[in-house]
Image 1: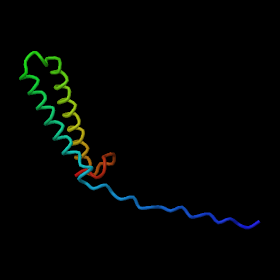
Image 2 (image 1 turned 45 degrees about the vertical axis):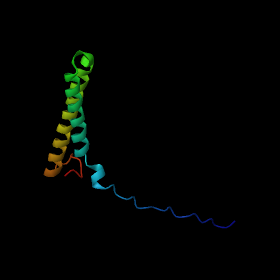
Image 3 (image 1 turned 90 degrees about the vertical axis):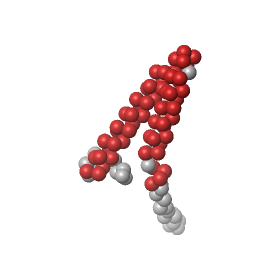
Length: 89
């Protein structure tokens, strides 16, 4: 019986994702702006959309929490903290 030759595994270089696609700032800004617009429309419409007021407020709160987490992580990354995310500007 002859020896079998197996193909060497081919490792391909994975291209890096462009920074503009990984930057969370535009998403946070647009999302927050949309929640503000929704809250203004809901409050201006009177009693018809009264049930949506808490939803709009919670959307704003969740966006604020997300922004706070991002800013804390970015500050830690800039200081070089061990547990901070990498790649935040």
